Amino acid sequence: MSAVIAFLLLKGYSAFTQEVKIDCKTHVFKTIPEALAYKDCAQKLSMRVAKIEKVSDKIGALTAITYLDLKSNSLRELPASIGALSKLEQVILSENHLKGLPESIEGWLALRFIQLDNNSLSDLPLGMFKLKNLNTLDLSWNNFSSLNPGVGKLKQLRILDLNHNGLLVLPKEIGKLRGLEEMDLSFNKLKAIPEEMVRMSKLKRLALANNEIEQLPANIGKLKSLKSIIVTNNRLKTLPESISILKELESLYLSYNQIEKLPGSIYKMSHLRNLVLVGNPISAAEISALKKALPNTNIVF
Image (cartoon, rainbow, N blue to C red; front, side, top):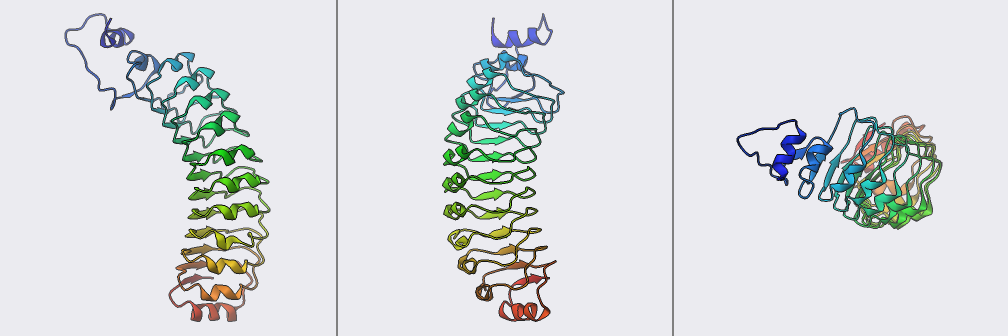
């Protein structure tokens, strides 16, 4: 039986006059049975907002799949067989009720991008840290209070999003992510940032808003690629002198902290485009001096 006939029978057709052809490289399959009819070539499976509560074990037969989208369903778990999808490059599992992931995902060796935001995850399987090609990991809006040190093994990671969790501390191993370019840790319960993070020499955007951070790493100046730092609504009382070394820094958001005086080195940051100081007890005299020293900087206070 041809794949086309099998597809039509799965859809409830017993007679037809013209063969239907599907380009497996561009067609997005909407159900597992439909994709199974083309299991040797089906590459994209999207069942977004389909009220799915459970994924069939048969999904493991779709070994040609490179793109899987199960966003906005009611999934609480995934079958172990899903680890057989070794060609997966993109996975979207946002807005479900997942509390865990199977260890078998270590089989997703081609995976580059995964969205797991808006679930109920509090830990990751060790298999996740074997995904050597992963460059984007979105874990925002989950229940993490800590992060497994294994995250440091994801050497190709470029984007890490952990905003809106309950993170209390970060492992020092996070500093091993030397290729990371964007990291969002906003809306957590962090009191400190590990010094090891200053090894992320390619980091361009660091978001730390709405935490309980009392100080930034003394050697933050080593993050030479930083363009934007967002530390709004924390407990900072001062900034490290080394911040002036950040020659690529364009935007520095410091609103709603406890900063009374800025380090003298900040007056030399002529490359700064935006400096936001709203809600800090900085004197009017210092603001005036800043404006004079940095005439090309948009200073909001």
